[in-house]
Length: 315
Image (tube, rainbow, N blue to C red):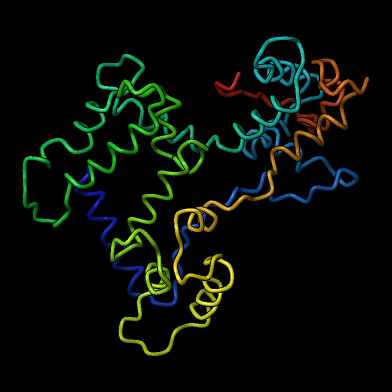
């Protein structure tokens, strides 16, 4: 799908959403749960398996024998031990769990990488991204679909530069991931807030007032009576969003709204795994300590049928 088709689709989706006035648009970026399983170790380790491996990989491990589970777990430990000192710390475990849970993001980046890396040098420059994304559309000052491509390009360039930590206008894969998914990176959160405010702040005064806040979620479309959830959102704005009670949200108040400081599930799970596996209580784990508790980390519900198992490129 090229840019024009994508934007046309986007406009149609927007029109469809606006035709259903009781639907709520949610701009809040919640941290995803690590698993939809109940975290009760007395019952099973299913939650821990999903948290450590990601739900899809956990399904694969369910078919392994204990011996295979231990062997593959040992290979994972080598990846988790980022500084290669022979120990896995709580911080390294936390990073691994976050990686497992964000695999869908990395897959999305991989799917787009080849399209933008035109010279196949393992990097994506701003020129490459701009040429692929906008191309000849920038030559038409008055496109038929009404989109302002130059304005969109300026916004993209600003975000690209923010993601590009060393300022060379060339993105590594990590920087490109931050560009495509800025809400996932701490140093990109200001640009998420800025773009959100630009979208909602219709009078461009640098704030989001109550009507702009509601207007982003709900269109009256001639209906005099607002749905109950809209009334609730008005109360939420007054009671919780507008913390200083000046009738509008500033940058920090907007950030608190769209990027709430949720409970860190990955940190809690890493702490739990270390506590349960740290036999000598030195605050870090050896490969042996982890493999000894393979049932906690990856488990095994192996059948007796000897299924042929093929692992992915994770190993």
